[in-house]
Image 1 (tube, rainbow over the protein chains, first blue to last red):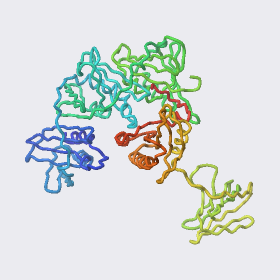
Image 2 (tube, chains in turn yellow, blue):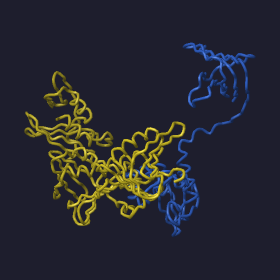
Image 3 (cartoon, rainbow over the protein chains, first blue to last red):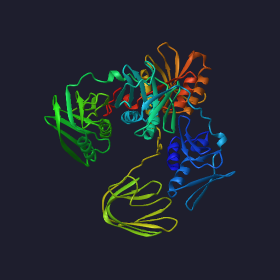
Length: 358
Length: 219
């Protein structure tokens, strides 16, 4: 339990401490039998409370990675932490560790969020996060694209992310989490961490402020700074209609792409040849070899070949729900739309890769 | 530089002994005395080599290379296929940031990529503390100092500030403003640049080069 708490909070602690080395640590504060564990890099904060057997109240900051490694390595059972003047003694079973703590006085004071709360169903929200965050950019050179847009729509909440190669849009109908026409940009990194925290059952409490957002799941609270800026006008990117529509079994498609991808090396795309009742997936890497596989499929439209980055394609198919997925295309150069069949609440728009003849 | 392609065998005696059996190889004898024996593959290490200072004794069929430590490489030439000598002259050294220089060159050729209506006055415009990358005039005729970086970091913004302080001493230029151009700009550098009134422009190197990437983008 302590190992999980240290690991979770430690993911918000930073390795790049700059002027504040204490940020490489996790803060442990004992109050009665409640141990609060906090990690922060000032952009993202994760705080958990765990039930422990407390003997004396107090606080300490331990190097995050070291503390997590130590506690994780101990045999299952009780772990004791004892703080003396200059050291923290960690013991479990017959193992003893002594660690020099970081200065708790330097640890930033983190205010609890005060904005009003909205409750969301954790399972549905968690699934939406997993579907959308994957399309957010991780390139800090374009900070706006590292965020996920939360926007209020007429019939609920919409989440949108794009890295300029793909775009994921998920609607959560009936969820009025934002004020009318409100739009906020939440860092994808924070939402990726949140997706790991969200389990199946409990509700999730969201608080959106002007500069920060916080999410509470059980006894864990994640707080993140919001991204300031204008999200691209994504609506104009979604084509109104497509002349070609492929329907194929989702799991069979995923397995086939993964197999063919073995021969899609050095940024080689996979090619999807659509026509008749067959989908042919292939990859050719010069001087290495080639792979191809055929799948049964339903296809309506004009026969065509479209090539995609295999990782982006796999990410899109994985994110779709249902037994079958549909891939709507116009030609080899225009964005394609992936959806789960009969799942109107999610779409994954993906740009093809130019290949000879496309 | 002497380049010999020969069917040869090589024996090294020193810290250990090594033998290269007879095969066709390239033997390089550089102007500084370094000797290297290459096979037809790999770009990094020769099969056998000896750094200068050393002494090469050329026999009819055998070359012996000896260094001050007493290590020797004996090259036995069974058949010489090619033997040529070239004077390479002084090497200018490795230019580590070719991209940055090329970026400056491309922007000098297309200053409108920085801003509509921008025209180039001079590339490498001299100041007392060194040349500013580009001096341009904007659509309103105002002088614009442009600092070009591959990665836009705080140092680059400071550099542009120093150049502007110098340029503003030159009354013939009139009012001068600054533009910080980079392929990627760090958020801290952007904040600092904008707080000093500079415009920050991110440019796409491939687009400037006219390279059409295979990966199409949504926007």
